[in-house]
Picture: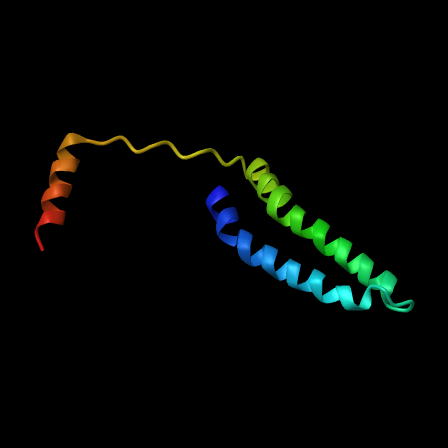
Length: 87
């Protein structure tokens, strides 16, 4: 889960930042200003929920455990070295 979250962190953050920054020009206007501020706030909160809360909820809901490190078997290790050395 941590690897997947880190992999998607930059695209999610950049997409939300582009949308938030795109709302800045219409934020000071009287008619569209309140809508722009609510969209900007909603995007910021939703982005943080997507990056922090949802992965944690997924891990808790499906009871995902940290994978155990693989134990090296001496017989498999020597065979693997021979397989990788020959082409």
